[in-house]
Length: 287
Image 1 (tube, rainbow, N blue to C red):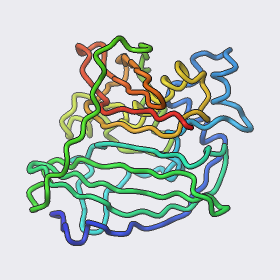
Image 2: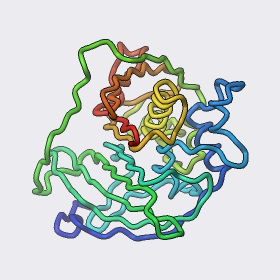
Image 3: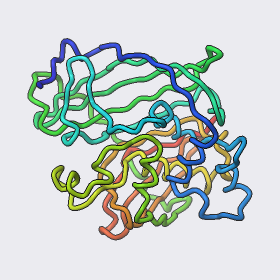
Image 4: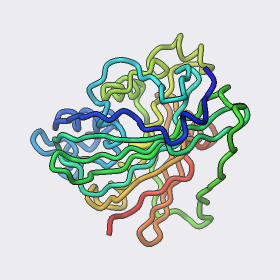
């Protein structure tokens, strides 16, 4: 079904309530590889049974953490084949620390629809409010839909975060477990692109790929651990554009440059000549 720009742009998305528990937080963190430093008190704060600290990127999965069906992309005026869709960018802006358990309400709308010719980019913004009425976080994300362009919309802006030419403040190699995608999907993203070899081949990949949001979370955790002493309260927001794929079993090279309250990050795959997988990556340190 072609994109109906008049219906899609500015469309209100269905609101709903959701909840999460310490176990949901633990499973999410384990899906990112938490626990590799299994005797380190700072690392174990991610896995506390009663009150684990919550990495801010958990916000991107909290509303769907209990879902067991593959996701659908269906907004007003937008109905896209899941096999044509990849996550384009993700940004979380925190308004306060995410509690280890909670209930919240989600509202949202489609804020932008860009026509890239051979593809479409659809941007949504979600506002999440806690049960006490206080805003918790804002979630901005977009999808890139192959073959869905050509509907007559504007092409949209081009923004880029430049990687500094100086030596990074840190560089870490992060191995991705062969079962990483199978672990991460337990946090609610059951897209078969990440678990079904036949589906992945039908989508043009030689094997299932790692969730982009898993790479996103691993990158945020790595920067938080190395630069901020594993203290998630120091993270005010995190954003990235998905620039390439990661296959389970590969190794990420994560480099970071700190300037004031912003950390710029570069993320590449070691085994493929440092092919970039995340771009325009910024972690904002809370004031």
